Image (cartoon, rainbow, N blue to C red; front, side):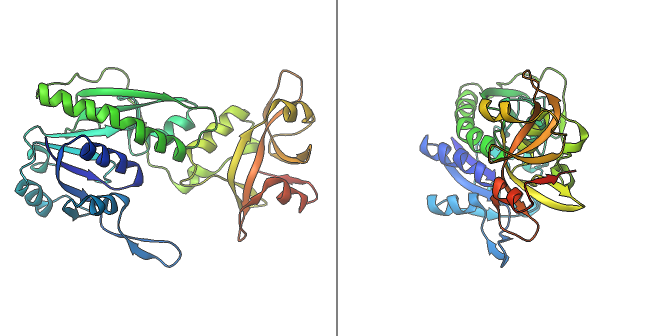
Length: 319
């Protein structure tokens, strides 16, 4: 099938490569313009732009899909448009330009978690079985008929970055099945059924982990997972932020050693490891908590959490 592909970040690249490897004729790629990256703010092509260059596919770089993008796509006469995390809206007349319209690989079990940050919000809500949905693009947000689905179960504490990487690989199966389905039946698709929820884009404030709130270790770990690596998890010490690069559930031995008087938000060295208290008590009667595996104090490089605590006489209060 003749396909125009639209996508930008790294987790859209497996879909582009899968379409090419399956023998589809990807006649063009639309991606966002080069963006400044790194401390020196060097203009850098998007991961999808780099992949398209390697594959020898004509590429349009545009942050807005207006008349120029519409004409560019129409010139290539695609049968189908495929979008995976492009980062912008497709409106008419571009929406209707491909013969079979556009389909979108979305990283949630629609209609749950429509919007910009489905994986992140699902993890923050404590969900461990995460879905992918390929659906027909329509004017309403993430509301079109569903073609195919898939799902993957993740262990507690799997970060959003890790989950997106895994889903971007496994989601290619759902995408290829959807393209094959449309080739057989151009009218295929079933209406979404169920309660819809919205996955708002994350802000820096979403990254604040309030250990002192009394939230359970499971809830804190889920929050941390959803905001890692972006926008990044952090706590406050005396008003100053400290990045929480890696949090881990306590293993059985460490959990048994945690003193019962460890308060929520209190960090101590326990069996030479850094543990921060959370808001529940485990079955053995010890305070529940999480291991501060790696942290990054303000203005310093990331370091082992135990080493950081030793430099503070073995204790700290994380608000």
